[in-house]
Image 1 (cartoon, rainbow, N blue to C red):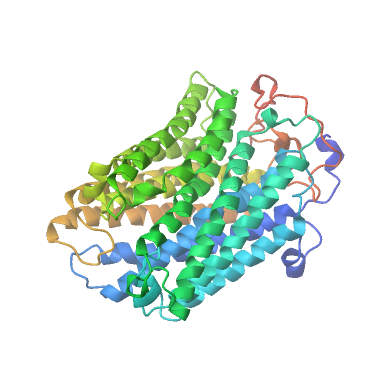
Image 2: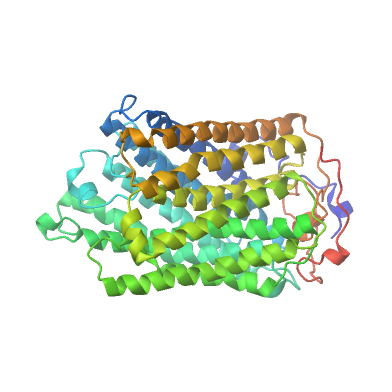
Length: 541
């Protein structure tokens, strides 16, 4: 399986041309591009709502948005960013594109189901967006009952139906990945030769399969209670609002790992490639992904410390919450050990690695504060929680996604982007993010509640700083879109392996041919064998 044997075959970006050929494609790579375009659109929409929030909070008075409109804006920001960007961001794009190639397969096990999952995603997202034009939703992205089930007069049912539909997209994607990994690995591709990105996708798929049905049924019950006045969550008619919290967080805390585990897999690939070293403790890093997925299902109760949950149950959940930090720490220490005395290459993916590690470290450590019952009672529903959440989801998940996008962009498109622009954007995003969210730890600890459109004047300085940081963050994100699109038009042609990385995806042309490999690959090397890796093919300016 050589590059020369493949160069005369058609790239997946080539014929057939036309919109219909893309909308009816069964090629996992084209479907990944469809997902990439879709989630970018929703990221822009969710980011616009975020900009409105930060503009409102520049002054203590609610002078830009009314309280009702503010509730709808932050709800839709959360719903769109969580369900239509963060959850599908890496699995549906980089995972879809790379997983078959990394294991030596020509496609996913069920190509038609893969295309169906994208259509389900688009339908669910469209239904949810219909809520925007039908009065919005004001419940918060968590849809807490009994307000969401009976009291709210906004389009809760429409939004919940959209989330319910989209859940099937996650389930089908996870199912497809699991079957592909078990049944379609190339000869010689044993489990302990798999790239760590693949291990992360496998663990994520397990969470998708096991957790998504729970939240789908939960939001369906909310819609049923609203429509049929069943006594499920509303105590006025015999329901239990705390039951909703148990059901919602049983999925939604593992969902954090749907968003962060794939990013951890990306960072493992980038750390090895940019350090030109074998991953330190490969098996520990691989199994830590599974450990995070498993333990993640056992910690949902730390979201209920201030509910009617008993203090003894809270103590158990607090201890397990501390335990989930262990496999995360294993990854972080092993990445650090891999880079130690490595031949680190200061290309733009390296900047995203360090950005991820710095922000995820802060997010992880502040999670321990919220896992301790005494502190959590003080910090619950303050901006401390908002800051922690964004350090994990955006600082971790989005930084990992953008790092992977910069690393595999040459492979996906056959084009190189401007390296200097990539480094500047990474630094803008890093510093802009910290300026936006670190002040929120301070005002949260001081007692500023989240989800309020007005606040006491003593908090204004920190809110102005947050809003200024959001401007810097927005510039960084916009810059990325501009130079990546420019690279498609004017960028130099990418070599097959610009980084000198290992892995099957770097042994085929950029962009790949339609069926990935001209002949079945046979794997004889261990994962991350950088002692025998090719030299980087530069020209990456």
